[in-house]
Each structure stands twice: as C-alpha cells, then as structure tokens.
Length: 237
Image (tube, rainbow, N blue to C red):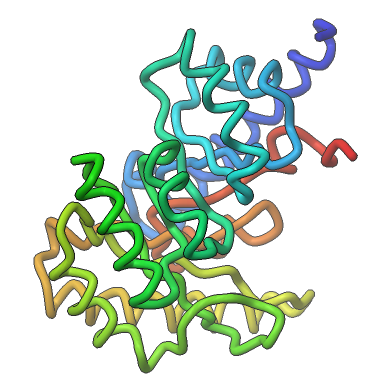
C-alpha cells in the first residue's frame, strides 16, 4: 500500500476524531464516551491492519461470508480487536456469527437471538448484543418496530450467554437533517426508558450514526458510531 494512501487514512482519522470530540462537547458530553466502530465491508485485510496500527480496535462487517476469511487472517497478528456484526443476520449464519464476532448489533427477532444464544452456549462464549430498531419505519430497512423493543429486550435478557448492551439503528435516508435529528432524538428516548427498566450499567450502548450523520447522532446521545467512508474514502468495488 502506498505511503500516500496510509497518510490519507491517517488524516481522515484525525479529522473524524476531532469531529467526534467537537460534537460531544457541543452536547456537554465526554468525548471518551463515544466508541468508533470502523466499517470494513469491501475493504482488504491490508487496509484493516493499517487502521489497527493507527490505534483503532473496533471493526464492523456486514456479511459473514466476506468477513470470516479476513478475521481469520487478521487475528493471526492482531488478537486484541473487537469484531462487530452490523449487517442483517440470517438464522443459518448464527453459528458463524458466534464463532467470528464478539458483538452482534443487529438482533431483530427473538428467533435470531435464540439461535445465537444456543450456539454461544455450545461454544461457551459470551456475545454482546444490541437490538436493531427501524426507527424511520422505512420498508427497505431491517429492525423491529419501536413499540416492540421492551418486550424483546426482556426476552433477550433471559437468554444464556447473551449480554444485552443496548440499541442500534440506521438513520432515515434523507437529506433533511431535521428528520435525521428527530429520529435520533426518538431513539435516545427509547434508550433512556430501556435503561430505566434494566440496569444502567448493563444497558450502556446506543449505536447510531454513520459517515453522513454521525455528528448529529452524537449530539443526540449516541455512544457508538459506525464509520467507513469517512475514514477510508469511497468504497472499493
């Protein structure tokens, strides 16, 4: 990989880190409360290793078929990284998700939660999970309806080897950032109610915000943002 490519990634990371810090301070929050998950879908193992060498430790993938060989290769030299499954997960991929990932952010049914729990129990591996909410109601998106969150949370909390950490969403697909902010604000209210119903120490992750809207998400209470293009530039094809 060229020196210029590495330099661009480093510069992008510095800019993103400053944006995260500024957004947190604008909302009277500690920037250290925000976890950056680097989305590495379509990116090579080589580029992921560059990001790891720059100090990043949380990486998100959308598809197990693509992620598995990269994770296997990278783990040979980097055993301290946390791998997040952020894409829709089919039940027949649940075992692979448990084998390769530490964190599943896309729980959208009791069925998939039970599948993950069963395989995690078999492998005796604790898996952190988030419930994915379709906060915008868009038919093209996965996720449960907001009104179903609390029932599913109670059910997931009872499953062995699953640690429910909070909620995840994708902001609405619109250029109207007022609508984006409105959706994130609604998510924060749901998150706060969930924390009241359970332990605030246990429910502490609100994953929302991507490359186009992460600053708004942080201002509205996000504790975890998922960024790919903002760090690596346009995707490889």
